[in-house]
Every structure is written in C-alpha cells, then in structure tokens.
Amino acid sequence: MVSARIVDPDEGPRSKRAAILVAAVERFGEDGYENTKWSEVADRVGIGQTALYHYFESKAHCLLTIMRLELQRSHDMFVEATAGKSEPVEELRAGVRTAFSVTEQEIRQMRILQANMSLLATPRKSKREETERVAARQLVQMVERDWTNLLMRGMSKGAFPVRDAHTLGLAVLGMIVSVWRWYRPSGAIPLPEISDMIEGCVVRMVAE
Amino acid sequence: MVSARIVDPDEGPRSKRAAILVAAVERFGEDGYENTKWSEVADRVGIGQTALYHYFESKAHCLLTIMRLELQRSHDMFVEATAGKSEPVEELRAGVRTAFSVTEQEIRQMRILQANMSLLATPRKSKREETERVAARQLVQMVERDWTNLLMRGMSKGAFPVRDAHTLGLAVLGMIVSVWRWYRPSGAIPLPEISDMIEGCVVRMVAE
DNA sequence: AAACAACCTGAGTTCACTTCAGTTTGAATG
DNA sequence: CATTCAAACTGAAGTGAACTCAGGTTGTTT
Image 1: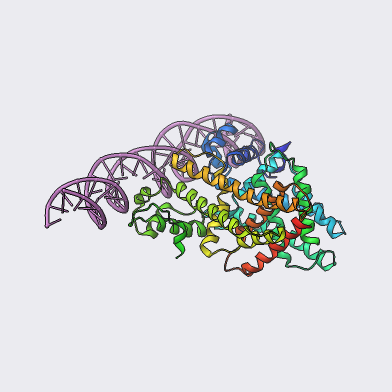
Image 2: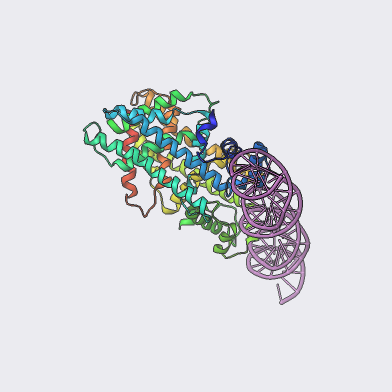
C-alpha cells in the first residue's frame, strides 16, 4: 500500500493522519501548496476542515511533515544503496540511480520538497512547526553530507580527481533534484532514460 | 545606478514603480515572497499600501514582473555573451560565466525566480498577471532553447559527443541555477570559485 | 455501564490582500 | 495666473482562507 510509508508508529486505529498526508501530497503535488485550499484536503479525506487541526497544527505543519518524511526517505535510500560498494564509481552510480528509483507518489513528494525548500530557511512561530522545520533542515544537511562524503572517499582513494567536495556535492545534488521541477510521468522522455543521462553526467563531472 | 535595469520606458516622472520593484526584490529576496507583507514594501518605499495598486494589480503581479524582468536579462546576457564565439567549448564556457557575472541585486532576483518558478505553471485569474506569467513562461522556454541550441551546434560540429540535447540542456541549466538556492554573498566560498567549479563540471558533462 | 481519550463539528475570529470612493499633486494649457 | 487634467495617492470598508473556540460524538477500556 502506498500510504504505508507515511504512517508513523504511534497512531490510533481510527486516525486519518496518513489519509490526510496522502491527500495533501496529491493536491500540493498537482496544484502546488499555495494554490491548494486546506479545506480541499479535508473534503478529499471526507472530514470537516476543523478536524484537520486534530492532526496538524496548521497547513504549513502538514507541508513541513511531508517534506521531512521525503527527506528521511531520500537519506535512507541513499545509505542503503551505497552501503557495501567498494568501488567509488559504482557507489556514485548507485547514488544517482536510487535518486530516480521512485514511485509516482514519491515524485510528487520530491516536487513538493523542491518547490517549497525556501520554507526551511526562516524559523516558524509555533512549536510543532519549528520542530519539523529543524528536523527537515538537518536532513537536508545530512543528504548533502552523504554526497560530500561519497565524493571525498572517492578522492582519497584516487578514483576521483581532488576538488572541493562540498561545492561539487551541491552541484551534483542540485542537478539531480532539478529534474523534479520539470519532469512529469506523462512527458515525452521516460524516467529511466533521464536517470541514465544524469548518471553519465555525474560520472563525467566527478570522475574525470 | 542599480535600479536603471528595471525602469520601463513609458513611466511618468513621479512614478515610484522602479522604487517599488527595488524594494520588493530586496524584501522578497531576503525573507521570501510569502514571508513578506505587501504593506512592508509600501512602508519601505514611503507610500500607503493602497498606492501600490496604482502600479501593480496585486502582490503576485509584482512578483511575476520581477521574474519576467530577470528572465529577460538572463536571456539577453546569454545571447550577448555567446554571440561571435566560433569554438563550441568557448561558447559553452562563456554561457556559464555570464550566468555567474551578476550583481547582488541580480542574485536576489535569481533567488526569487528559482524559489517561485512553480508559480508559472498555473494560469492567473486577472489579465495583467496572466500576461506577465505567459511572458515569463516563454522566456523560460527561450532560455532552455538557448542552451539546447548551443549544445546542438557543438554536437553537429563534432566538438561534443551526440546526446539528447534537450535533456542535457535542462541538466546543465538545472545545475547552474541550483546555486542560487544556497549561495549567499556572505558565505565561505566566493562566487568566482563556484563559477569556475561549475564551468569545469559543465565542460566535462557536455564535451567529454 | 461509566469513564475517558480520540475524534469531530458549526459558529465565530483574524489577518493580509484587495476594492472603493473619493482627495491631492503638479505639469501643461489658455 | 487661473483652469484643467491625469497621475498619484489615501482612509475606510470588504473579502476569503487559515485558524480558534466551545463544545458534541464515538469507540475502547475497565
């Protein structure tokens, strides 16, 4: 089940939290966060608008939760995919490939994450929102460090020419995530082709 | 003068349009569009909130205008910088270098553009907003075509290996503009260094 | 069946953006 | 110098979507 990913452990049996997150991902992903009325999400779940506040402190709190969960997933997938690879170039390729091994739901989550990244910059007034924001921010840094560390390992092993690993990592990551700004499943180019193209680009950028 | 760039030809002598745009770029660029109150922009210019509506139909109309102007500038600079270069690799390098030859005001404009790109996806209700949106959208496509055409020229001349020029162009462009998400003039790495790093990455990506 | 927490609701509030119904300013004209 | 006119501006009122409040309902647990 698609929603299984975004179920948190400590939820009551009649909780609609997961359903709200799924509905919000759909609406925020298709029409954008600002363009989506919070009450539309309630309608889609089949509850009144005010019931949403039983689960999330605000519309922004829901958005931040979606972003945090997606960042957590991205980080976990990266670690899982690159673990146990001894050859730096293979590790690099694996990192790129997992970034594009995603379901349609996850594509929407990536799109939401990219479109609202700047939300993580400024502090939130309410406590629960701020908690999610800080968590998301740390995960962003963790993902950046994932890439930086991968590059540094390759450089120290002599597999990659020595360059500023941090800036190079941000460039690689920036190129990968920029895809979610324009890619649509209905588009002309299938995702595996894009993945191969980016993989080649990243290898040439880093290893030559 | 910095504001000279964003003065339109047909303005009365006491018009505050340019001053509003400058103030809006500052505020939207520092705190973000959503985080900035429209009335704060009025305060900074030294007029009442309602006076803003003499120049812009809405807060969004002002934002779209800023984005359109920045896209126009980016396109014009690209064309100017790459014209007359006969060597594809030199043309490529020139394209990257001009992308990073920017003032602090222009950095803020790029940041605003990147952060609110998704606004261009859905139609606007009011006429003047929609006009700006469509113009901005066409300029985005023009900038994408600028890069695609540059790459195709290099491929047909045999200077670059043949690849899908459109996807490759989007990847190059995506990597370049992703810098404006994290770069701050106060940061540790100076912009010329970042420019050199990206220039090298792009050349390896495209020409090898 | 009593108690309790989880879950939900309609009515009302707030805040920023926006509209309205005019007023002021200053340059051009007779 | 007075008149005219459009550009520029204003305070007060309106709007809509996010949010709060003061309770009501439901299902589980003891």
